[in-house]
Length: 316
Image 1 (cartoon, rainbow, N blue to C red):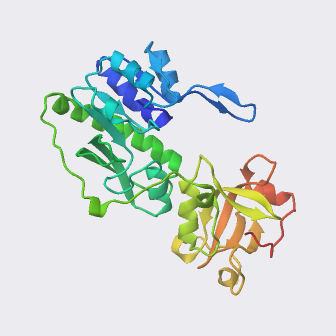
Image 2: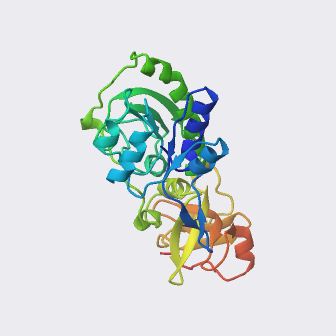
Image 3: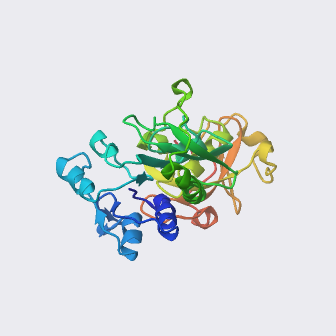
């Protein structure tokens, strides 16, 4: 059971290892792009390439959906970013239980956006937890973890890819133990748990009074999906990449004196081939890839050549 590209390596690994996949469950096809073309999920596309049957219930807890899954008579269910909560009627079906390949080091970052929020919150590492599923949200007993560092160069996109591969590898490592009944069951410490809810529009908006590091983390935690945004002339101005400009990053050439001195956070301090320098709560950052309203994303240098933004402009 899976939906986005994150889940595809786990499916491919199970197939390559010779496990018999009796069925694949994925979210329904959704309209994509400006033309709203009905598009299959990455997991569905992978399943069809291998000739596997695919179920796409609108609601997995619906009796007819449970009956469809039960008819497959699965010995084991593996989920990876499926996108729906499994009801008890499904959790109880397979004799070896239901496993989840979760993109965090549980019990931290339970929920739907663990990878993005780990980056936004400035974590230095995250990872994969392979766990038995329970009725709560990511509360089941843990089997094993794989730790993956978060580098400054990483975005949510690069971490999704790294963690998807780590998840597939961990799954194959542990499956023989699980099927032999020898896998550990490590209860989670609820006192240490944190929650990573799906991202909202408010999460995507840049707070210029935050520190340069916090803004840097927020932008890369939203790339390449929604991107971060600010307002310029009362219109959405998206930010797809931020470079570092204060002393912490050793990249201060060409910045305004004192990183903006008494200027308000959000003030454009300078424009150069390096990008758009914007005052933050503790210094400044360079916007290096942007997207004005109604335009495609572009390098900041290209946007600056248009001459439509001036130093002293305030982004909000």
